[in-house]
Length: 227
Image (cartoon, rainbow, N blue to C red):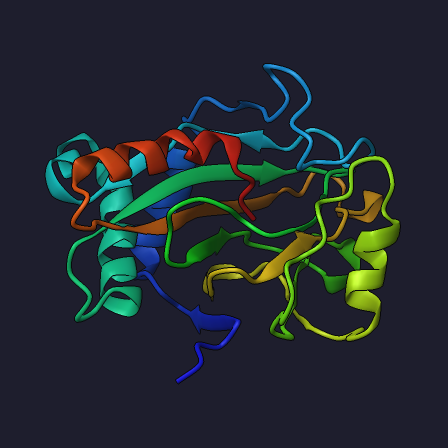
């Protein structure tokens, strides 16, 4: 059976757990995605979103998990990984203020799906910040991510011209199937001081190749974009 491109679940956490998680996010140390130089998954005019550290849930790494993250880890396990043992989950906080965006891309690396969890309390669809996905399955290798010349990339989606979008909302979880191309529309000036607040990450399977593959997979987490 084909997995849907997106799966949306609202009211994921108990309200007190969502409030506690948001309060903890106030204490996280964020930095620009470009702090070590231009990361080209964000194109030149897509601003500088902010990201926190990446935490890993699963196995012995659970001991390092901040307490405020544990209810989210539990929910992700119950919703996305039920009857699928042997997975680890990477979790990173993200902030998209006014002027930031993330262009069309397809995540890479050893993973079996991604997620975005929203803790944005107030939002208007006209403020942008929408997660948009090209839901049509690709039968050919995707066009390379456009950095300077977007012609081929534009042509690759023009034939379909359709997809699915999701607006930020309080306590909302979005699961994204592997290999689904997606982007985040620019946060408009009308949003003012409101910020698109999310935690995002990936589900990483452990295989017969052992821990070495997991370590390589998580080494790539910081170089990947997340919605």
